[in-house]
Amino acid sequence: MVIPEESGRRITVEIPEWFGMFGEDNRDATMVLDYTDISKPFFKVSSTVGETCLGFNAKYLSCFAGEEISFLIASPVSPAIVVCKESDLDPHSKHFKEDVLKEDWFYLLMPIQLDEDLLGEVYI
Image 1 (tube, helix red, strand yellow):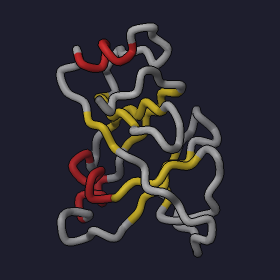
Image 2 (cartoon, helix red, strand yellow; image 1 turned 90 degrees about the horizontal axis):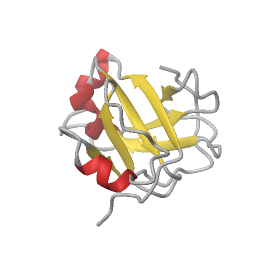
Image 3 (cartoon, rainbow, N blue to C red; image 1 turned 30 degrees about the vertical axis):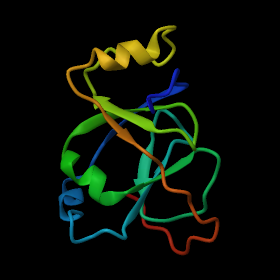
Image 4 (spheres, helix red, strand yellow; image 1 turned 90 degrees about the vertical axis):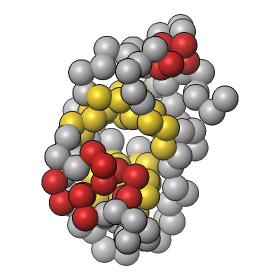
């Protein structure tokens, strides 16, 4: 099973309304979640990639346009778990994997390997 055994961080962000435009027709857009400051995480279209950045195909986030969601992140190479903001899922639970399966809904998103030489910066 691909659900991580544990998670190290929980990051809650609001997905901008205009993410709705990244549907099936926009397969090449990569959104980078930067959580350098965990209290103020943000998405950017491209930027310098650091240890606190995860890239996702924008079409997979488009269904959350205008909503606040939480990402549970174990590492930059593990699947991120997406749950509703109101979820009380504890990323440090000893039974994390079992707790995820008890959620009403959740998504698993595999991060995209980011290119260190991304050009330009557009902050969201």
